[in-house]
Image 1: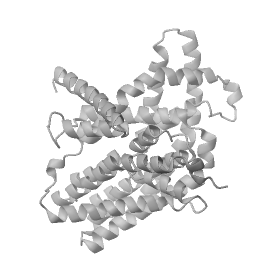
Image 2: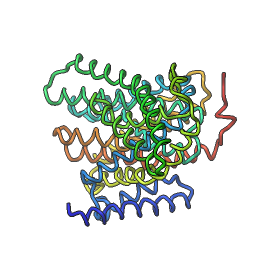
Image 3: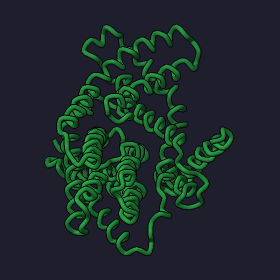
Image 4: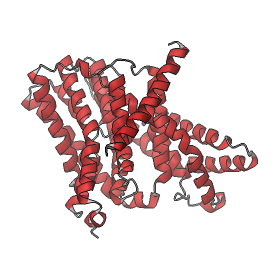
Amino acid sequence: MDASQFFWQLALILIAARIGSTIAVRFGAPGVIGELTAGIILGPSLFGLLEATELIRLLAEIGIILLLFEVGLDTDLSRLAKSGVRAGAVAMGGFFLPFALGFGTSRYVFGQDFLLALFIGGTLTATSIGVTVRILRDVGRQDSREGQIVLGAAVIDDVLGVLLLAFLYEFSQTGDLSVVNVARLAMFVGLFFLLAPMLAKCLSYLIREYAHYDHDKGVLPIMIVSLVLLFAWLAHAIGAPELLGGFAAGLALSRRFFLPFGAALGRDPGFAERVQRDMRPVVSLFTPIFFVTVGLSLDLREVDWGSAFVWVFSLSLAFVAIIAKIAGGYVLFREHWLMKTAVGMAMVPRGEVGLIFAELGRAAGIFDGPTYAAVVLVIAYTTLFSPFWIKLFYRLYGHREELALRP
């Protein structure tokens, strides 16, 4: 690509994202809807001015990694740990229910091939942590009790999704399953998530000392972005999603994360506040690129709008995709139904994670044209309409005494 052409495309993405977000907020919708819609308008679905090239996808990947870094920075680790069991239960319910219902609907209702039905079920397990976090932030609930449960569940969902993706991809290529390979990958991911925040905490001490020595105003963002990208690379190297590296780095730099030997590293809440302040413009620059790219990745022109199969199949899968994720919130047996519903609804958006599954299925020759179109429609339904449902839910019920808090 010519450099000047890329500059024009990047400028268009940033301006369209800002305008779309402003318009969406003006009409009472979450800002993420405006950014997603901007991508659909600019992309192959409508005007075809832009496409999600590898370079744009790379910038979008940086955007989601930095967004998860900011989420980790704001995360109260003690609250996340307290919600660990509940987050795990929600993740399991929101993973296995959509997979089973998606597979069953595809295989036994619509008569799809076994492998194709497995990929469709796998696609429905996805939860877009980037879209979900942004929606919760737009409605001011990212730090709430349900927000912490959803964050933990979405992270676990991402890890389970990677394992399932590796499992299905190997099966599609070899026709055989290797439990040993999947178990080894699961072990590596678990070790990374346990050890990465500790290593990042140690490195953050070195960054803090260097920042005190070098008074250049730009040194801290440079060092922090380097740390985030380093941990994204480490996550990918062991087979985990890159965004988990960003989340681990943010968690380590949080004011609420202390190692058992944290006293030896010193505690400096002011440093965490400075990181948050200096990194906000960087995160705000890259994050909209990610959401616009999700819209660019949806090619609604590929949908045969006159096909009865596409409509019936996509609407059936959309119903299953929504109900199964909401039902996943109801594994929280002791919680009030408002809390269960809020958690389940926040897990519905598929976004870029669902598109990864769909694209892998198409690249492997498993999805035919009508099936791929139907799956893309399901991803579009759940991604574009979820913010409206969630905002309406909170408008109707407010916080209802923190969603009818129970002991």
